[in-house]
Length: 158
Image (cartoon, rainbow, N blue to C red; front, top):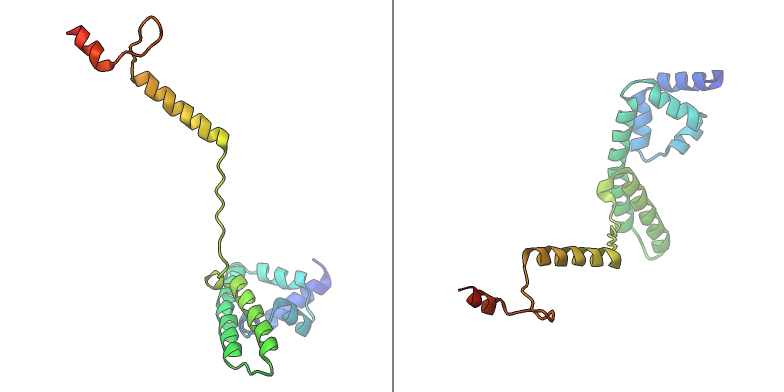
């Protein structure tokens, strides 16, 4: 880790975890926080991992920030006017997308389920079932290969 990165991490320590996480909760992205503070990605994520448990608290902050973005999407939609409807629609879609990335409770995409059936597998299963049935059922046949009636063969045994 370079000298500049260590200095930037020290600056974030002085600013404080609560202040930085509050910026995230106010709707700022890591990119905008980094630009405001003059901190790059490496320094920010290095700072997160420098203290045990900080990354988990950050992830919880992100999850909570999902609620902020969802609420902002609702406010934007409810306050839309005919003059700004297209801009409001884009803002709502963007806030919904961010909320879904931060908090899975807001992920409303339909999940696709794929079922793959192979005909070969079905044939193998059918053959196994047929073989099982043949094993458990003894068929009486005459010399010509014709199947004898089970009931008549039972009568012959009497």
